Image 1 (spheres, rainbow, N blue to C red):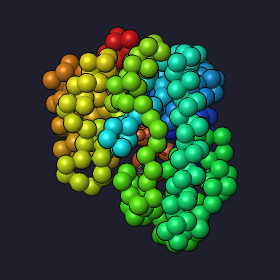
Image 2: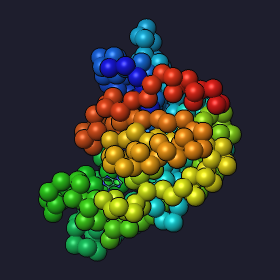
Image 3: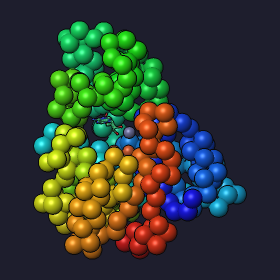
Length: 278
Ligand code: AMP
Ligand code: ZN
Ligand code: FE
Ligand code: FE
């Protein structure tokens, strides 16, 4: 399988696999490259480079940075960022701390809804990773009150749901600036998933994308397993209209999501275009 998977998670955030496993699987699949894009952390870089040594797999250091707009999540991928950049790390530390506070509030909401999940169990599940909704969904699943984690999201935890709490996060424009100032290139992740899912009107607006482009964003992740064909087409067209690089990635989360590693890939040519925009 040629190409680059530019969107993958590990145990450093809410994936369920180690960086070593991801690298080994990518090599096994014959991928040309793998971007490490855990949520709000750059902790997996050194492990990834070490694991890929002696193989033909190119590791692209990255991050999936959390931003919010109108109380819904906007995720911005940054590639080739400098992990030593102080402004970026300060902001990511703040995000981590806010995630702790938010997880506590979400658990209080579940408890008020009659679901006895505990914050201690969420922390156990998350381990070293910044606390995310998928960890909370697992803890809720363990209470036996729901059939699977997707039901937890659909009934309670999706953006705007009864147990949802928005997280403190920077604006998408600020996220683009932070990633760009850290020596990287910024690409908006899965713009079709913005707002409530399973709705025709969902998706990040052309205006919001234009503001991010004005701030230095260079690409759009039009290819994502959870995008509809219409999403993919819309964001490809928007990318072309703004002269942006079109990317694709699997958003692999191990067992936490159905998305398989390498199920969406970016061509080497597109990766070279991205690299040239640094
Ligand atoms: P957080 O960063 O804590 O807001 O969690 C975001 C993660 O939750 C995303 O990366 C997805 O893995 C998951 N997620 C968010 N919304 C949904 C949804 N409606 N259905 C399934 N998973 C979701
Ligand atoms: Zn995730
Ligand atoms: Fe995301
Ligand atoms: Fe992701």
